[in-house]
Length: 137
Ligand SMILES: [Zn+2]
Image 1 (cartoon, protein in one colour):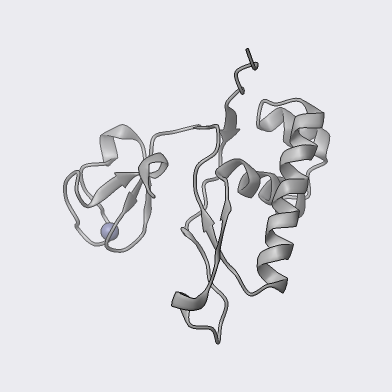
Image 2 (cartoon, protein in one colour; image 1 turned 90 degrees about the vertical axis):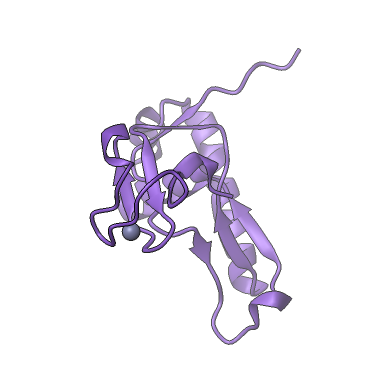
């Protein structure tokens, strides 16, 4: 039996659901799926300038696992960049530090279970308009 994959901790979820290239009709684009853990690895190493060692600790995974996730992220981003593909950020074996919700109207990220009933930004209200980040497809 394969070993179960340990959840990767995500402290900084992305504010956007993905990226699309300029000057290309979206309907013609292929979509690359970047997992939340792959996004977080780029964030920690290339944006926050942490070593892979420290980044691995933050995500609660081993250093070799981190390197695999990170290399996969770079490959996907390079492919999307060169081949004019859109990037969608979703999925992965992840565990968020908080219960993150996203407003479907204004796209604001809202943290915490107690805050998920109402968006303070645009006054969206209720379960249909505020969706848990892990459930967004
Ligand atoms: Zn809102």
